[in-house]
Structures are given as structure tokens and as C-alpha cells.
Image (cartoon, rainbow, N blue to C red; front, side):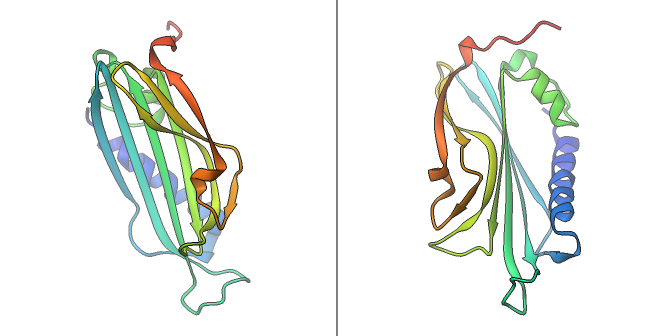
Length: 169
């Protein structure tokens, strides 16, 4: 599957979201990256995208001359049947209309530190799934987290791809 245009779109989307959130208070540490992975599990085709954007922020609470580290990640999952998959993809909607299951999860670490992270996250992401089409997703229940793992602020929901029906077009 040719995803070059999709990768460009996803990078621009995350960059715009972060810039809209911070305006001139955000300085990037490097370019936005996008890693696409295509995996076949049993009869299912899974396409995953991980988009990262890292930089520094400056606001009234910043106590460093260099700014506070900011680390933003966006995960996309699309799972469907390979025989129906599009050959070229330029926009997430194209995969959303193909996939039996699609998910989006965005995670922002603010003032990145360990072992006491804080930030915010939203959405859901595929945790795992098996050849028989059964799996689990992490679903955000508490948007903000502090001094805990972001995953601890999620619930786990089961899914079965065999039970998902796409509406006829």
C-alpha cells in the first residue's frame, strides 16, 4: 500500500495541532516523524502509524531558560481485510472507510520527566489482537495524568473483528 501522501498529511496534522495549542510558545527540537507499519495477522491487515513531534514550550510556569520539554505522540490503527484495502492512501478517512476497526490515540508528555510524568491523552488504541480477530484496546477514561503511567488512566475493552459489520455503500 502506498502511504506516502498519508504520512505527509499525518505529520502536517500533528504539527498544526501542536502549533495551534502553543502558538509561538513552542519550538521544535526536530522535524515531525511518521513511522508506518503494515502487518498481516491471520486474515487481517493491520496498518499502524506512529507520529512524533518533540520540542520545548515557554509559558508563565517555565522555570528553565531553555524551556520545558514537550513530547507529542499520535497513534493510528486500521484493521481490515487485505483484499478490500486501497492501493494508495492520502487521507485517514480513506482508511477509516475501509477498516473494520480504526482507532486514534494522542499522548502529550508535558515537561517530560521520569519517573513522575504528567500530561494529557485522548482516544483509544489497539493493545493487541490475535489471528482469530479477537483483541483488546486501551480506551482513555481520565484525560489528564500526573505521577502515574498514562495507561493506568485507561480501561481495557475487548473487540472481535468477526462481529464488526461495515455498512454497505
